[in-house]
Image (cartoon, rainbow over all chains, first blue to last red; front, side, top):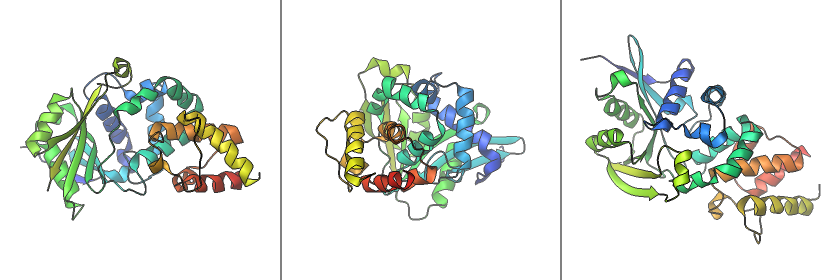
Length: 213
Length: 79
């Protein structure tokens, strides 16, 4: 069995975290929501994400300190970005502030004109729960219990946590099965009947899953 | 800029971004009070406010804005 070292991410891992965010957003599809919503290429967004991560605004997915990574002697194998959602500083607004600051204004105007419908599929993070927001295991390390190992490591570093939450697109059956194996259960489904949404997001239905500890 | 003029200019932007013609803003109002004030609309709001007042917020300004009163104070400090 392969040996994995689990550790907190640091600034040397930024490129891997950018890859993790992009792959998690794609949710197994070819649709990269940020690219579609803000009318920018993946390469342009990678550069912007790197700058956002360097700001280290903790409590959102664009913060290196949110991540625990799994490493082998050949390199990084996976990462999970998770935090306990804070009512005073919701992660969605921390992320919006970073995007407002770093994105070209033309991209925000584009989103305003073309992509407002994406708000239909937003589910707020559960206050007080440990939200697992970015989950990424490289293809060659899937099926090796890394989700379990990384999640257990996050729990260990957040003593007193009573609940876990995770959101997943309904078409990502592989991920849903892995979360169910870990003990997550479906708690809420958000669906949009607007077919146009699939131009911007990998799917038009999202599930909130929870697990009590 | 006098505060009432600033608030009235801001109110026009909020009405426009949230598509709520009769919206009246107050200093205490925050994203918790308006369902339309979601994360995407927040970005649009920031962009429209910057354009209207010809200012650019710093990232730390944005992270300090917890309600409209905070926003007014920061805008005023830049005019």
